[in-house]
Amino acid sequence: MITSTATRDDVRAGTLATLTLAFDQDPVIRWFFPDPGRYLAAFPVLAGLLGAAAFTAGTAVRAEGNRGAALWVPPGSEADDEAVLGLVVESIDAERHGTTFEFLAQIEAHHPAQPHWYLPFVGVDPRYQGRGIGAELLRAGTARADSDGLGCYLEASSPRNRALYERHGFVVVGEVQAGDSAPLWPMWRAPGAAR
Image (cartoon, rainbow, N blue to C red; front, side, top):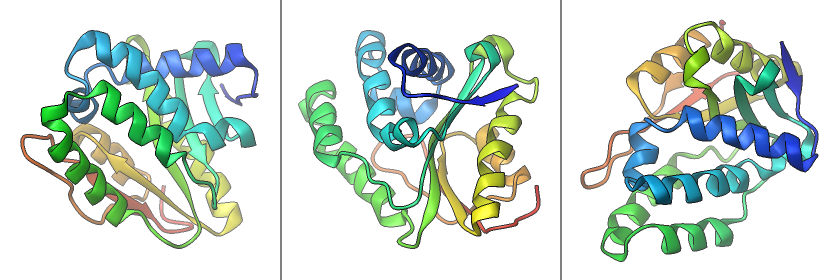
């Protein structure tokens, strides 16, 4: 069962904890934060910053028991870029800043200018993966975007995730890679695309 999250701190913390478990083996996120301690400290902060508008608007969704979560950022919302930059600077080694900023600049260049729903993070607790929870979290957001007549945008960080998103009507619109990073695929879903 999928429910909208409230802005309560305990619900937000549970949602971010679920995403932290889900992204533990993600190739792009762990390229950013290869050290386990830094990952555990920085990733929940990053997810909270990029998905802040989803919590504020009540468009963050989660599966029963925090088995999965998705941060659907409404059209017109923007993350606190200064805070994100500060987190990157303090949690990534200085010698990796150049490649990291190049990677982030490529992501920004692909982000659509037109109004859209943005999904910075969707993930399922590894114990519950493969049970359709991720698909349900995607449907919750794409249905709303369809009713608004708006497209959706996300970045796929693994071939497996990319295939899941393609099954929900997303198409690859580019590829992001810098230095020794894992590839990332910006994806767009037009309103009403097949699911």
